[in-house]
Image (cartoon, rainbow, N blue to C red; front, side):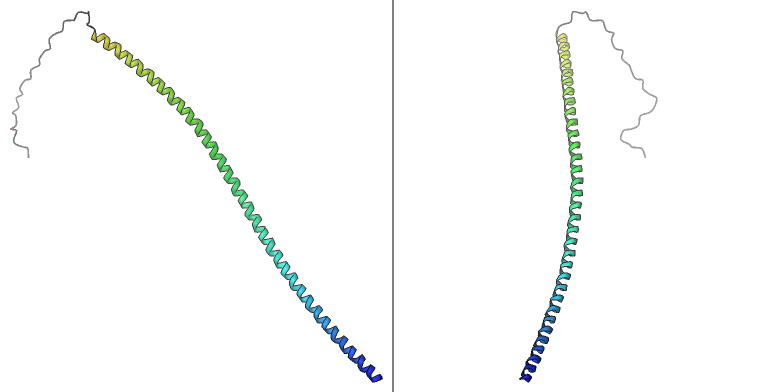
Length: 153
């Protein structure tokens, strides 16, 4: 009986040793899996951080671009407002010139009409005697005239 106990104790020790080795192997496998997961998480975190930095940079660049575009837009709006004011002023000036020109034309027409009316009435003034025009006679020159058909060579 003693041999049976010894044998069962030996078998129990072997099973315990086998269970202990299996537990150690499982523990080692779990430790390796945890290390792989930790490395994977570190790599993912680095990728997320890199992506977040790139997004922040892109967002900052977009803000800068938007601000410069808004400044250009405001400048263009100010230019347009100044041009509109200038156009209104020039239109008013052109209208003043049109009125002045209309008054000038009206005065000239009125003046010409009065002059035409005066000319159409017979004048009561006596005409002044005019001297007869003196006729000028040309002297013939001593030069001999060239024949008309010939050309000089």
